[in-house]
Every structure is written in C-alpha cells, then in structure tokens.
Length: 247
Image (cartoon, rainbow, N blue to C red; front, side, top):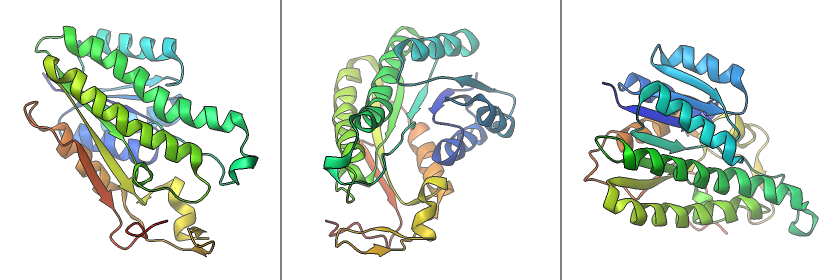
C-alpha cells in the first residue's frame, strides 16, 4: 500500500508543486484548499491515487470532516504538510485592521494546529502507528520584513507549534519538522521579480527567487525519511536574497 500524504493549500504555488512531487514519489495524495476547482486540476496532474477536498483550515468542523474523508478513503495518514497560509497588506501597524490580523493568524497558525490535532488522532490509532508532520514556516519565522506583523507573528508562533508537536508526538512515533522557505518563485512572490518589494531601509528593490521545484524536492526528502529520523528545521532560500543581515 502506498503511503498517504495530505497537503493543505494545495491548489497553487508550493502546495501544488509539493503535492505533485509527493505523488511522483509514490504517495497517495489528499489535496485540501478552499477552492475545489484548482484542487481538482492538481489532482488530475498528481494521478489516480489523489483526493481533492474543499476545506477551510480555519474551521474546526471543516478540518475534522477533511480527516474523516481521508480516513474513509485511504485508511491512514503518513504525512501532513501544513502549507496553507496567507499574508496581510503591507501597511503601517497602526493602520492594520484587526480583521486582517485575525485572518492571517487563523489561517497560518490556527489552521496548522487544527490539522495537527486531527492528524494526531488518526496517526495514534492507525497501524502501523505514527507519521510525520511538516509545517511551512518562513524566513519570517527568523527575521521580519517591513510592515509584516501578522505574518511574522504567525510564523514565529508556528515554530513554537513545531517544537511542541515534535515533543508531544515523540511517544507515539509522530515526528514534526519545519521547512523555512525564502523567495520561492510562485504567484505570491511575483512582485519580487517585477515591481520590487519594500526593504528594511525604506527602499523598494527586486529580489531573486528560486524554482518552486527545489522546495518540493525538500518536502519529499523530509516526507520519505524513516520515523526514527527527523529534520527539525530545514531552510531553502534564494542564495542572494537579502536575508543575512535583514532588518
């Protein structure tokens, strides 16, 4: 039986590339996201052993239903990639609507917790027991960009969730790591290559990006390790992006 992976935010970008790469590596893949149509397109690309499910990771009932469908379809879950995420408009902190703060925290942090909680339930009771969880962190989990308080706070907190998950899962053969990504070439980072993005010194500058397939390969590497091995933190970034010394 093929191992089973779940990728959230699988309809585009890092999620799409990772889901397809996992399928090519021999995984049956469940694809989750809010919009079903792009998920179905990725499922067609991933192959016959794939499942597209509309899910709002911010909603506990929606997440529980997702995991119920995975259990009924595949019988187990071996790998969870908590990839769903979003950012807020880059505005001065005092101008940030509280609704934007909640939206980013609920998607990037609460969504990852809700999926992790359901994964624990399934991974603990399945046989063989256990599995692997990888959270999509960011270089913003280490150092912020200007005007990114919600995203930076969520990614710093996600690092705490990664550490707590790794500890709490240890006795149940559930391992957890985090991949911190810098400037993967997706729709989200298009302005880095075209119009430029705000820098810490107040200027706007173009930044290099990397092919998202490099990130997907890293995700597959983490996903295919045996459960007695963990990569707690894995950084993949554009070599010449302004990270070292940022801020």
